[in-house]
Image 1 (cartoon, rainbow, N blue to C red):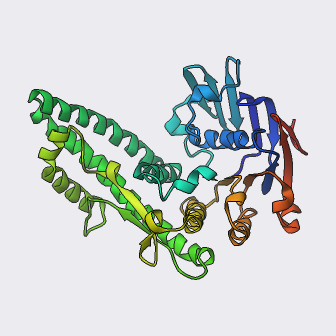
Image 2: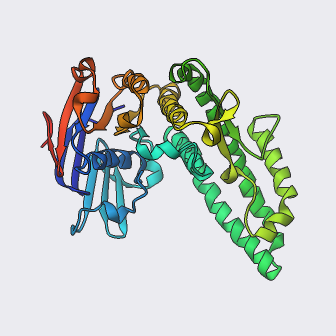
Image 3: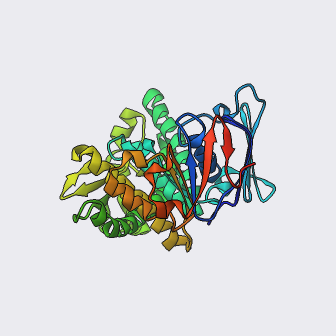
Length: 361
């Protein structure tokens, strides 16, 4: 998978840009705050329909401009204040239809808190990873969160007014249907990621193997949809009174987490910053390999100024991967790259929202 051409209009600090990307390594070189991350954000946005920086859609529109437009391959997104229009192959589409059309894996400085940060960040990592390779999972996830919202509203109503308890069974049924599917697919994908991480991590930790484990209160001896349905059903029954008291759903995939351990130590809690960086790098590389094994092609690799976050050994390990698929990598200088890597790269120089390169216009 690759993007041949990126077009931007009024996106962030780029009033007008066309960029032809090579199929291998593309380097975005320039000082900080010139637009390198904005370009990576545009590519990631076309892949996921949301900003990895947590920005609102309206903030992506250039200052004092009425709209913004992003396009690559068969995906086009137009932004106006309070409005987002998506097209796939020229036809108006929903985000769920666009997501995964352009698969990418992003590694950015923001990811450095993935293991040490709150569980919702790790759940979001898993959900996005699986959604990009499995549209059924994405649709199930959307359905689950709609049910969860309605169920929580009903729990509040029961607590506050003492009515509606007879409606809870129907919402439980929907939560069981979708929740069991999510639990099964997550556990399956985490097992596959663990297999990839087991191969990658010895080169990142000088020998030891990192282990990835899915953490859920809905444990099942039979890791099947049927097994998770039964386990989630028991969990909902056991927490019924507590859920009404709290007016929120206390069990299910929306409460789950994962951990990476090295020699039984949870790296998110006890790992050094260097160990956490290495583990996150391992997860990202495992994600790339999982994409290939699941769908037969490697995703686009987006690397936002991460070489400065890594020591020389891990820089070298990452640079081994950049020519295996289309890669777009930002850095402040070409000095960080060996000559052999530079010889295979297409270099774009970024300055004040302007791009200089062999295929920029």
